[in-house]
Image 1 (cartoon, rainbow over the protein chains, first blue to last red):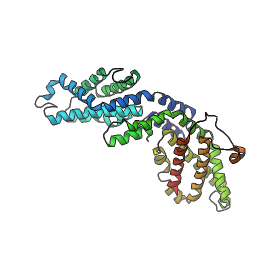
Image 2 (cartoon, chains in turn yellow, purple):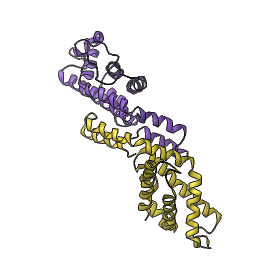
Image 3 (cartoon, rainbow over the protein chains, first blue to last red):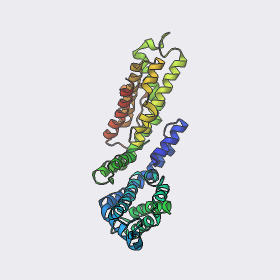
Image 4 (cartoon, each protein chain N blue to C red):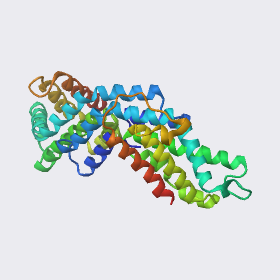
Length: 164
Length: 184
């Protein structure tokens, strides 16, 4: 799992040396920024279901045709799966905030997503709309502090860019 | 390879649950004690040569048969291999301490180490003893409990702010014990 610490250790191991002062400084930099992202992770975890619900509603409001017969959301089962997937993306963003890197999104969310969506005939636009709504809806200080919000939004943007 | 943060994430993913609440408390303590941890890693890396050479010397002093003809530290080529292995083990322990997780130590150092030693005829009992001496030295340096009486001419105190390092001392000790458990 890619993070600052594992990157530093992998590099040191490849060179066969002990962690150098550079490595320790890199980890220290990561730790200094950790408070904000842990706060964002905590707030997101506590409101995950509500955030998912709002994001999914926004997506079906914009693309109402998705609920018509033959489309991706033409039965309640399929609609539920759409909300479930959005929950997965937000959960992976929670993990990214914990790790302090894009490793969880890369390994569990983005790798292979394009192929799967194409095979299943799912529109990625709908996911982008939902995540964009979440990004624009979140605000400081109502939801979390400004710095935490910045961290949260940067991972949302990362997911949006990967899907588009 | 995992660190303290990604370990939490992997176990949360197995339950498809977000990370929140109580799990965050342990991560917050990693962040709060981040500087102590870096000092602890520094205490090991700065004294690596001393820790390793002292451990191998101690191991031989307790069992002088090792450097007599037929012993496993005879001739110097084999003792050099022993010193090298001591440094490698200490290096992976320093990685594990930095990451706050033993996975790098397990995956890249301990996996198959016992089998390798048995195949090469290395006495694992002696190797475990050397690691135990490294544990004493490293934990004394991290916790600043070393004294001129036990350190002798090699006595050194790290120039760090005094504080409570007991959690890090026991964490580092656990990584050494993990090595001992894996090879004996």
